Length: 116
Length: 115
Image (cartoon, rainbow over all chains, first blue to last red; front, side, top):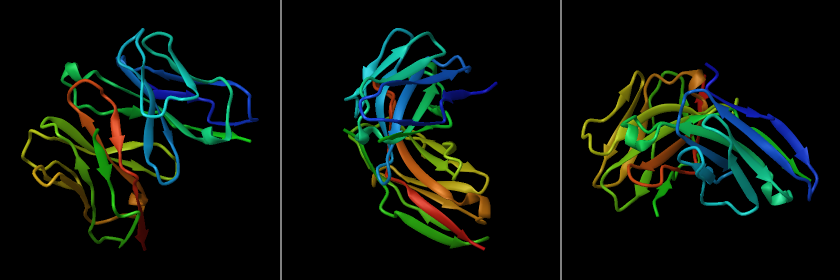
């Protein structure tokens, strides 16, 4: 049981390049999330998916797209990377609120992205 | 929109002593969850403790306990018998029990343990 996995762990891009961050969970969770963490700002939600086939914008969605490929996988794409997207990216998953579970989100190990 | 405030960017405590980290939040809702997450240098986010707003009893997990004051919208974390492994960033987070399921995080408190 690996929990939430993310690839890659580190990435360096040049301005204008594109890339996709991959996330998968093996806990059969319905809800998945992408956050970014910047110094002094905590974690901020980029996009989330309440169930397979649905996605919604979070607090800072500009410059990103997401795909909920199936129940297990939720990818984050940067179409044209900018230096302002230099950050640590976390994927998370949780049971739906309606399941009666405790609301905990389980996090992946993060991806450190640098855009030059 | 909900906001979470951690007013202590850094704290330090002697090993084996007790330390309290502060968190306040703003919401108009009555049913929600509050969490403390720990982020050690490995970067992994680890749940420390959770509190459901409709439960009056303060949550406790071994050496970690909270002081939940719903009317004051305060949710502090007390770490007893501090250990070197407790050194980390600690984030307070809020989650509504309706609609949008996202976590709203505070800016974190960096805790240093002095041997």
